Length: 490
Image (cartoon, rainbow, N blue to C red; front, side):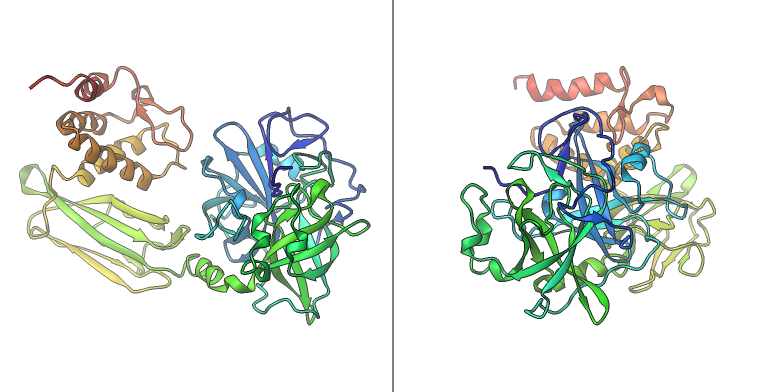
């Protein structure tokens, strides 16, 4: 039997009788009777809004449903196997309402931050850096959101679970019944349910089953960092769609997150396995730091001479956080000569080379002071003595190109400008090595000169910057391909 971590993967169409873990079916099934037993043998849950649904839309038309826990402002933890490399950029969502099966129909459009919503958009997600899918460990991932959720987070249990913690609570958005042993098909998913469970401590070698292979469970260094709960009937158990969901414990009347679920038994029966929180406190603490407490550093890239002796100063920044940080115009984001308001007030995560430009005349000095909520205040200066942009610099050339792409009227706002820059610079380097740098530079120069009108751009790929529409820049692109594949003999 194949390994069955219990994220729920669904194709664009599903059969009306079941959700599908892998493979395709037809539309989202009707919601089951709310009185039905689930998680498996659980009950509907209404008191823990911090346990959220994680929805991942994928390029192949499939989508995945998992569970997560809101443990810090703008931060959710889920299972590593739930975050996807093939996710459409900007189309991973967290749901914190009470009618997922109805509200999911509004996707991919959700209200912007600051407006009433049952959804948050995921800005960034990342599996634990040591995650090894072959042993399912450590099956943890951090999600950073585009907004704070309207309730307090559930705190982490910073101490080990002990023999005194005999009972816990499991919560999830997964199925209430498995229809196949490998849980590739389940029913009842999309409704949040919970149940009390018995905590059995760390798993042992005896918990490994050849027909249900989870090789990490045999590693004596991994076993103590996992927790097992009793899922044998009539006890409740996790199922497909509950991946990333919490094991909660109570200490002195307060609820804590003690584990993150990633594995369950055949037919969603017998047992569930959770990754403990306490061995990974540094990992969780780093995620909290990168939720707005990490540095944001502005910089001057270079100045570009203009006609008549004036200049254009190009600025960028690096945001070491994993989410957007708002620094409004004023004393914390002060740039008196930026009269056009070109500088950002929402600083997105990542490195933004050549993010904006401000003109100035010879004899004038520009000063941009940025004081992020956490970190050091930095002032950058531009004047006629500042470094001049190198027209042959790949980053400068690509900045002009990406600026044009993102200025297109049909550009996807969820596309990543840093990714555009990275890809463009990489292409410039590779094509230069192949002796086609001049042709490539001519091509991206053509892109940089394209007006933003829709007829100039092809914008059919969500999550990516637009490309020139036929016939714009086709002769220049043909020259690149001819150079690569039909080079002139020396």
